[in-house]
Image 1: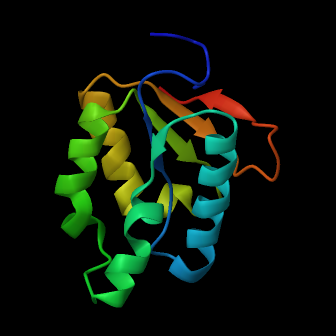
Image 2: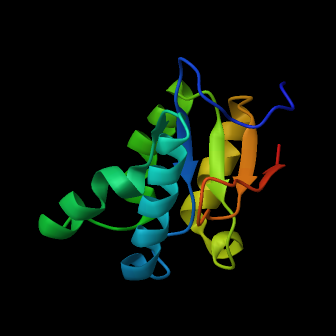
Length: 126
């Protein structure tokens, strides 16, 4: 496995991180992070950015179990996981499930402090 952090390339990375603890605040952290990563040339899929508004508007469940099938399917297709490392991350059931699935699939996992600029602070998690 590469020890090089995620960068521009032909595939996409799955952006994981806590959400249900405080969706109103954390959706903005995911959106800002996704925008900055995309601006830096990374292709990615973020279930929070993709589904938060739809789920809220159409009253879809917000629990990790409901979303696991689609999320795990996207992880299967991704180059690996980028996990937003925040205070809430260790308590996130969804993030723990995504990490476990990525490990079973042999995907690289990189931790990233939510960026405020195009300076990224990576650390290899798996």
